[in-house]
Length: 164
Image (cartoon, rainbow, N blue to C red; front, side, top):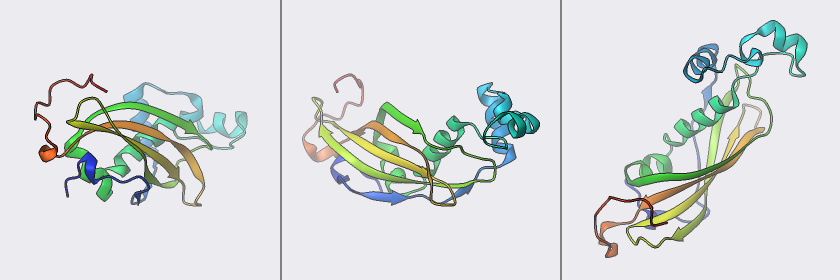
């Protein structure tokens, strides 16, 4: 189902399917990002030199996976075709993400606002990433520009994104 800005309502809440973070995920993310910090890569160092007692997965890996998990919800899938731009991100890392954690994301429509360009609308989504124990490990908001329905009386030019 395609969702436009008008289809969204403050308070709409979705929960994604779960996904387990594996060794291969951490290695691939290290390779892509260039982040080979010992905390992520060296089991002996992580066990003896940190308060965690074991390796920690990259926090940004959790953020990235949470974004992908959101697209597997009806809300995330619904707005994909009509998302014009991601305008901002505020994110907090609450507790470590470990290799072997099974995570899912809950996303709530927190705020909707019309913008100067009547072809688009602003949406703020609150995201919370949970582990298998129900502990929130990361949270934050994403602000996006979403297309409005074509019959909203707006011209259909999808050119600039600057009129926010």
